[in-house]
Length: 293
Ligand code: SF4
Image (tube, rainbow, N blue to C red):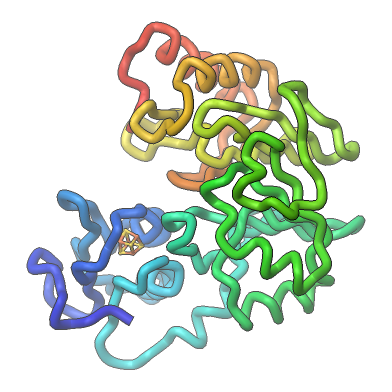
């Protein structure tokens, strides 16, 4: 829990506050945008939540903050709100919550699938989540988009005897992974799941396409709240921006309506909008225009 003595001075007074340990991961601003905003390299409370739904969202943000940098004065509602997680997004897809500082607050997702459940990247390893996953039938497969966001995947794999998938070029983050993705061609795993290698952010970055609707995009691309479009950025490209551009070009024909990133905003738009947005992003990347945001 956050420390009131380290409270940032620009929080508005009231129930919620952010302290100086904030790492500016953006999670709270996504989950409770009416409450949290950005200032410099921190998030802060821009407006105290009033309506019940806004307060619930603020509590969700408190629970998901990877560094415990959000505090709340008064009655502790964490236990009640915890039950919202994993948070349903669409069809059988859920956002796990409880983002890990080991992945700099990266998102992770869960798919309840009749042939065995999937975890995409990893949340913190917590008894509460273990119990929920257990109730839902465990985890058969853990897909790791890239080496930065593996967090506690090995602990979930050990607990549920899951098979972990990661690209060979990012194997250093999970040396005992059970399945290695090779090369740059898409790998059709089942009729529902396709792994598409997308080197760039890291050498072994890969995205997962589920049912031609949900694209788990890791740190390859995300939805920009500011510009309301698909985005990527050389500022967070650790390996090769030219490779990332080439990977983005190879994604142009992929059909999807959800983008579910590791960092940045998730979003759902019609297929034709996503296709148009991706083409626009490729153009901006090719021409070296500003692409982030
Ligand atoms: S979730 Fe926590 S660490 Fe991330 S921006 Fe908000 S307060 Fe900062």
